[in-house]
Image 1 (cartoon, rainbow, N blue to C red):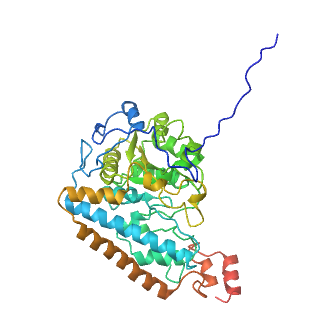
Image 2 (cartoon, rainbow, N blue to C red):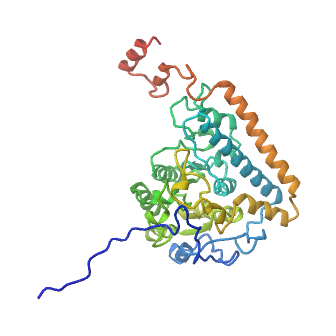
Length: 411
């Protein structure tokens, strides 16, 4: 006798709301600020698995810093972090407009995610090596890299540090510990782990930190890197930025509907921390914890930054086609700049007039830098890069066939 059964049904994850719907975050719950304990840095990974399923929070929505994760940063450091975030947002807005004006071909903002790159960079040592994805330009800003060099790279003019060889926003700066950005997803993760292993093998004191989006955790490079990081206890921090959306698919497509992205670390025996990515103090604190663990030869940490991409994925994207237009404003964990501003005001270390002045200073800095870069040229200016420059910086000793090709071009 044959046994009949129900027809199989394939599950396709879908977001709660689409264009025209009201944003829907109902049913979401988070631990209260200060509720999550802070473990010792030498706690075994197996004892930390529950940290993958909560959310480390320091700032409440009124601006008070609460609990054991509060890093107790000096007011001057907090003001510096706020000014860096304001500068980053102003820079992003101008460069987004520049693309719309035809001055460059492409741009990617970090609107809503500023606390992640800025707080983390401030928590790391300036000599630590960063392996970013394409939404961490705040690392360079927090390391005081010249804004004009960033703009020159975006415009691919003759002062472009990349000499026209990289897509816009794919920066690189060896002296600032900023590894070349790749447009291919997750390639930087095994590179970071390998660099960290080499640093440990050489008896160095520098650690590595790397960033990728939640969707990129589905890439094989991520999983290979996690295996090596775990097995060899590489001194590396792996940051998964869960901003809820890839280009147009929501985070459930990458597995976020079934579990957290921090839980990826559990299977590898890597301590998993899940943090409110819009809470500057919480991001700083978990980064500091992970860095101390790495420097103590206790191995890697996986951090999931739970945040929201407030703007488009890039200038090639229109988020109004796949999500409610006011979803960013409804995000229950607020805006990182406003939350740090409120904290400083609660401390009596910031005022509204100071904030307006800081905003205007950031805008004017970006305006002045824009004028300087555009005097050199924008994308498409004739003769920005000589054709013969393609032979430079490739080989230490140029082989004969390339020498002949260069001669054929008249160089």
